[in-house]
Image (cartoon, rainbow, N blue to C red; front, side, top):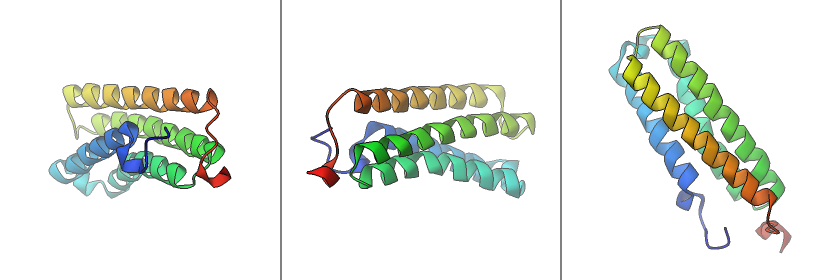
Length: 129
């Protein structure tokens, strides 16, 4: 962690961004574009994953970073749930659902691994130097 200077360097943030971009494409290229409430909800939750990783990193403290990573993980779960609603409304097919659910599960696992890493080391953050 000591070598990472910007949140943009974090693999979990990069993956969150890629997945958010996929949700944005679905919201533009399918009939989800007309389902304003669901469209806005899933775009917000998918964006929340990457945004909470960034915000937690920028706070420069281990405890706050862990808290925001936990929120990001929750947002990944929320997005997964909303993907089922998108599928149930026939906006995406089974293949797209399976792919995105798997990718969000992988991302949730990586976020959890990062939380575990922070729990098991002495890094306190630059706020406390």
